[in-house]
Length: 476
Image (cartoon, rainbow, N blue to C red; front, side, top):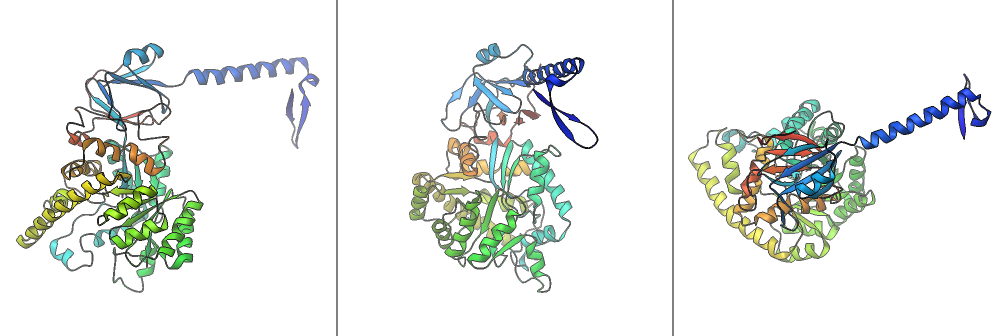
């Protein structure tokens, strides 16, 4: 055995046999003590046993009843009947008994905007602006302090977590690196919140893609650069990806319209994939969706006007469609009425628009279900919902999907197992299985019978730590 003996200038290596006997004895004792400390640390692993009446597996639809989950530190160690796992666990295991609750994997919001909270402006103000419902709040978010924006994001992230969203994919509207900074703060334990896949700035043609228009020419470029990365030609597309990578993003978000070329989009995908990042594409029209398909994008966000032929190609290529039911079920009317005075004409227009939309989305869901395409669901939430937290507002998507005809089990898959695959995190999240992160939620009833149970999550655990427990069952 050799050790390093130090002096003021350098370290020299000497064999243990050449040390004085007393020094050798104490060194050997030190080694034994270090081994003992290491073994003690291994044996002191934190164990928790969570019990409930039922555990629903969204992938199979199977229910384990009664159910328990044994957690070691922040990972799931084993899932099984309570009497089996209790017999395997030490007497000192901490037990959380949720009584008659239903356990589920932590929810995943595949498309959200945690650093934006749009308040609907007055009708007259909205009418005189381009993209008047959205643009004024976006501009304020861009020009105000980035620190203020990140702190708002921290609040909204905590509210999402409290509603059961343990993982989210944040797709833009976060400034240059606001969602990256928030992600890192959450990972470091400085603030509570879900795991975040951060996209940084959106890539867009001419830096706007319909969000903002007709800004002061002296300031326009500077303003847009705070929120978007401009794509002009294939070389510019590659550079935009590299600019985002400088801020350590997890995913590349691109917003395209019909003027975005296939070579530009292909350059984005190739550059991102070469860095092992996925590409999410905001695309609504058939032309923009086809551009995303032809370029090899990983997911199409929204996809409202996707054709049956495109769904088949997406299925064959393994491209996800991310359904964002934000404005379904009269959502805009619901959030606007408490905040602004609406004229009779506006109310009538909104009612007619809601009726037309409901017909379209019902067909949309039916076509997706029949096509066999991979799908996930995202709230696309960036709106202030009077009377609700951000998490509660995000959770409205569940009943929106139900009312459009999606089956409860498919809804659950869209925010658990399917979403985990979309993110590339299927080995870590999305299911209550051994080896995955201990992300659990519980509801009082049966979400298959009533999906609105997911709007009332009463227990949340992330990384093996209890975030929320509103059940009255005793803990010991």
